[in-house]
Image (cartoon, rainbow, N blue to C red):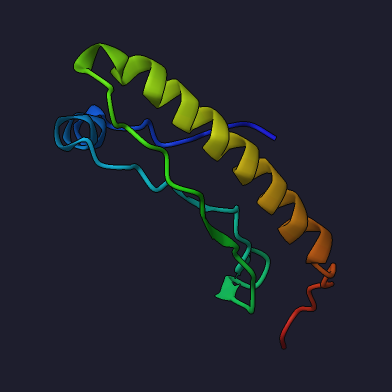
Amino acid sequence: MTENYIPLKKGAFHMAISGQLPIIPVVYSRYYFLDKDVKRFDHGKVLITALPQIDTKGMTMQDIEALMEKVRGIMSTTYHETTKEVLEGLNPVSSQKIN
């Protein structure tokens, strides 16, 4: 599976460190709703996970890159775990032509 993540923005990390506030990462699994053969949306499943907060107390602006890497790693692991769970729950549906 290729990883095509939207890059994390530094602004949220600047704000969290400036305010000494925690970061609460939220991860969405991959989702599958579109039946490409018949060009329609079907039922689907997506898992949304709110991860434990990551404390920024005592951090300075010099810690931003390391903090971003830590958050990215935690989110990546969760993304792969939840996507695997979604894929395992999919039932293959055979598309039929509609006359």
